[in-house]
Image 1 (cartoon, rainbow, N blue to C red):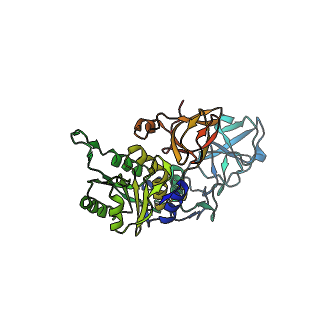
Image 2: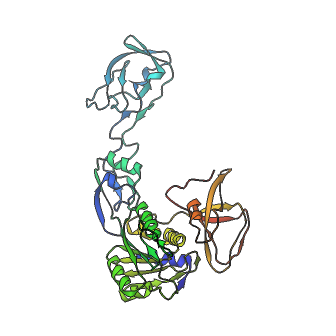
Image 3: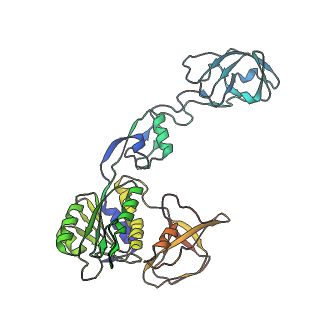
Length: 404
């Protein structure tokens, strides 16, 4: 069964379900998705405090050029509830609680010190340089929704509320199996006619980058016994990814053996280039992705179909990359009939995102994928795309570097 690009993505995302959650220390939660909405239980800041080193004052006592006696000093962490008397100023450090009665803080640099008194050099307004209790969050406020990916900012906010741990989606355990008699492992002396199993390493890196736990199963040879042994082991994980063996060759046996092992196939071809021989199925709750053997095709189909599925499994609310619009800098042509995934270089010109081919689009050219910062989608029913057209683009990597 051959499906379109969008049908394949929709069927995969409909089939996979979020994994269980687990409680982890904050630093183990970075880039992982929270499974519960966070509601503020107390105000942030917890009390009125100074945003600057300076002097706490009552604005009714302040005039430009006026002088006030200094009656004390409040340091950050002070727990006393001091009162500021009218006609005085109190030295205060950043983060220290605002004394009762004060309604502004004057930074040191806007004053002059005069033997136990402070001279005010400018105007003062009520509320100046005071961080008010609850101005960031009040009790009952929604901090962030379930499914939010935790960045350093979210980790900092959790710590501000005193949370040392957080409940997040479990990391997906993903097995990776390369297939083919022509393959040999990294580190072995390369024999004539053999190919190093680079797919497993590239896919493992992609899985690790998005927060999954990759486990390479090695190489299955082109016979049923070898495939059955390796695939059976791989089906014990949350997801299994195979590369090669799902095309139409005499030794492409992966699909048959998967069916023998009870995998329910949802589709086995996608109407795209590169990556047409891409299959997907489910074995109970294990997602099974069969990707092409070509390294470029394997990584591009992983990016477009496997990555969003794994993110959904790990509890992320946002698992599809945003479809950006970018202007084509040069004409591009393709054959009609299949949606093409074009490897593109990106740059900003006059505030506009622009794209151009990253190089030779032959699927055997890995260097083009290395040079690419995005994948442009060329619709299946068209052949020619003129310079200046806007195309849909998905960025590659967590933060691509734009071409200068």
